Length: 437
Image (cartoon, rainbow, N blue to C red; front, side, top):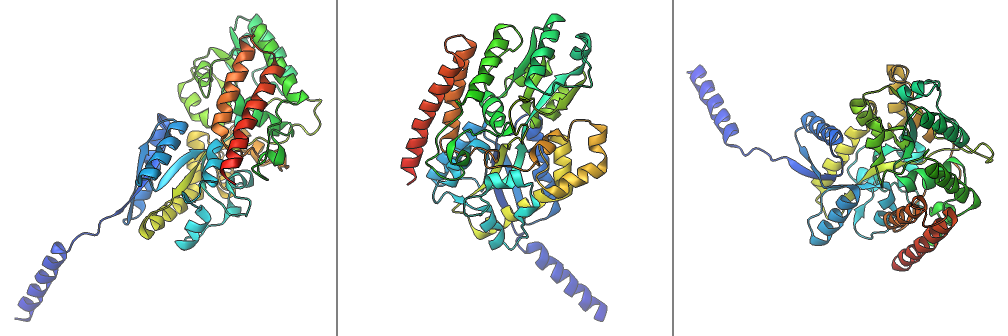
């Protein structure tokens, strides 16, 4: 009788359990701009987090190129249906920081969710870029990259160059390019992201000012200064290389990457985040090295600046959503997750612990040059090399693409193009300043 009673009680409890509503997971919407293999990476990160716990489900959605996803995010916020997390490229940082009522600072998010968060754990040059003047970290560093120098080792061999030695200075680049051309190479050198690589990173690498007010970090009244004698000299040199067939302009943003990966161009300045794609698709041996510099410039080389993007948390969400976002950011910060992402993509390990873990794994020894991006970023920064953070920055980049293209077509001199870029860019900065008083 006692056994029958216990059995009935167990059956009753089981039935009650089966009829109880299953607690639904809180869905965290994440809009991003990672396509191709990087889209697979993003999906894998979300899958890993989702499988690590039962309360939250991160749903990543590709929203187009960086400018498209930013526009989509802003439009969605105005319509009242913004995602929980929006990936924004680095040039959109000032726009997001000064968008009142749109963003929930990541430092505030983590504190309210009672999730451990130490900004000092992140690589200073990365964390500092996304930190407001009041010291509060505004967004979560995600796919941080920097500019690096790639070269085709097979093409070097064919030109009689040492495949184990990259050009160190800009005069070296010209000399190497001439030998590559003489060996039959139609595109000795190219660059992607013209303004990021040859103006922004070029400025910090040479420790010269890109804009006043410490490149915009110290106030909205910053104005552009990239028409200095050194900047003009550099673009005059690039123009001469173009006329001599030593440099080929392949288009805006990342379009030049495919020209290198296909083997068309032998030397290439681009994003460290391109490493994984180049390694996967290139049919030749290649290497990664530091950016070239002008040896007669005092203070050069200094350090490069952060590229890529960070994750911004949008306002207007429920506490359970914010708790889920905080937990997801905690997951992304795990040194093992960071190290694996760094080795997979070529993006920087955003924490010092992840960098040290990668070192211990032997990855850098097995893949020479893959530590270049980190080493360029972890040098001690100056007020001129901390980075560039300006309002209307995406539009300024577009202007500079227009102006520098006039140089390659022979319609403007380097000085005329840079002077015009400064003038037009400053007009945008003045508008941004007026709108955010």
